[in-house]
View (cartoon, rainbow, N blue to C red):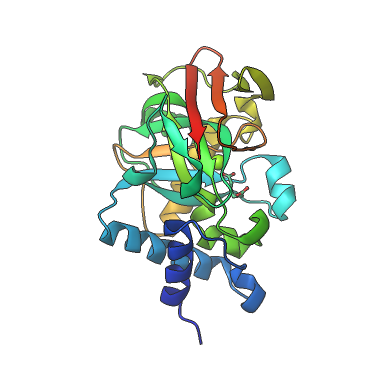
Length: 256
Ligand code: 0L1
Ligand code: MG
């Protein structure tokens, strides 16, 4: 029987070497969500053993459209490390990923510990600052195709993130206009309200779901609240610039 550690090795190696793999559920159709989170934790432990440090959490499937796409009614989460953080304004090397896509998000940085069942007001009180952000999602599965347990085991597709200028914690980010341009051409237009109606709901969900795994949001953790529009597939030569009403912009270029 394949152990959870073996499966963690499989997804970690796929990410490390940018190699597409078959879905785990092709051979393990009964893989549970709990086991998938255990695989995720074991795969992140492998990253930490290589020297990567905790940077926070990402929330996924935070829009109705994405939930329907995967057939679930609850958001999922993954873990961020310092090695996933990319330099705002810099370059992304396409060859380091299997089939990367970018999506605009809102980032929170935590100032006080946050854990378990909390209200939106309690969540906001724990926030030190907010920022515009971009997440690079890169499912390690062939053709970006997966079942719920697959994607959770694969760190909820998280592979990189950019953070723009930090703003005060009390900045209203509940309904900000967002415009993503590729080489000056609009490819996605949306609002931060697409993130569960208000990104703070994603922070509330993060506190609850992370607690189920015996963890809590700690000061210094970044929480990516989830995609505000559909994701854009990345091609070498593209310059991506995303503007967030009142928060500023986040940009990068893609090289081969
Ligand atoms: O960040 C996200 O919402 C993505 C979660 C996983 C699903 C996907 O890779 O599209
Ligand atoms: Mg995302």
